[in-house]
Amino acid sequence: MEARSRPIPAIRSALAGLGLLVAGVLGTGPAAAAEFTPAQKAEMGGVIRDYLLQNPEVLQDAMAELERRQKSQEEAKRSQVVDGNAGQLFGGPGDVVLGNPKGKVTLVEFFDYNCGYCKRSLDDIAKLMKTEPDMKLVLKDFPVLGPGSVEAAYVAGAARNQFKGEQFWQFHQKLLGGQHGPVGKAQALAVAKDMGANMDQLAKDAASPEVKSSIQGTMQLADALALTGTPSFVVGHDVVVGAVGYDELKSRVDSVLKCGKAVCS
Image (cartoon, rainbow, N blue to C red; front, side, top):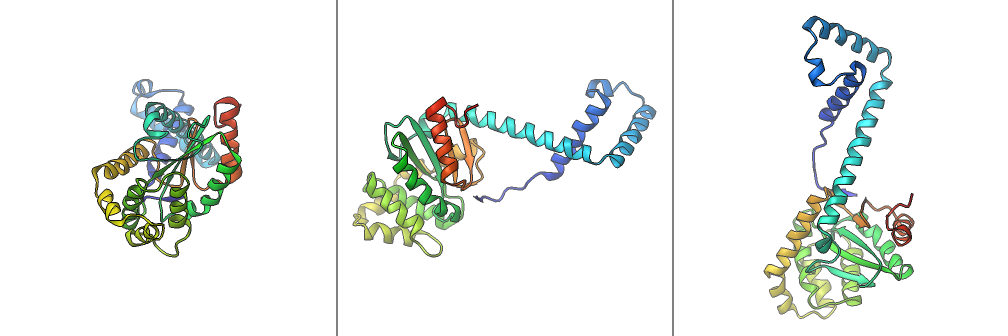
């Protein structure tokens, strides 16, 4: 997955994990801990320190539990965001809808035209559209890899007004999968021109508030879902991050068709 730069609060997580461990050893919460005298706290601190030095793997267990809880909370929050933004997420204004528009399951892809992993996923998505007749595909341009990606997103947003369905898919494949080197405005315009676009109209549409609003809406939605890179997928209520491959995506699509969830229990 190619990501925006975001600092990872490793030290903060480590301290939080240690806090969980201390609470577990003492069997107390903050209120109860306040009842101990300074001498008692110092004595217990020494006991905990000695225990950790003799059993350092306990801290690893605490950190693993912290990560599990954080992941569970993140997944629950994302599920709420999916429910609360279903209209925009599964085919809002300006989105490209491919595959079966009335499909029983929707796969949403957040991508960037400069994302190498998105290029790798292109064939997987194409294969899915052929093997999953009940799948609706929604493409969301999520330009996070620099100014060139933003420029390409505006041109692609304008191209959607002229290229529909299979024709836009061809444009998308050429721009995402057929370029060597960085992709920006020039490359996007060249692909559009090669496909016969009205270039004057394309320029007007690229500067339109509708295209700008569509891109900004995708960025806001991605932030709400805590997406930090591309490709990222939404299927059912689940978010799948990274170029996970055809088999994994197909498994999740099939599960939604079978049980209504991306992973059947």
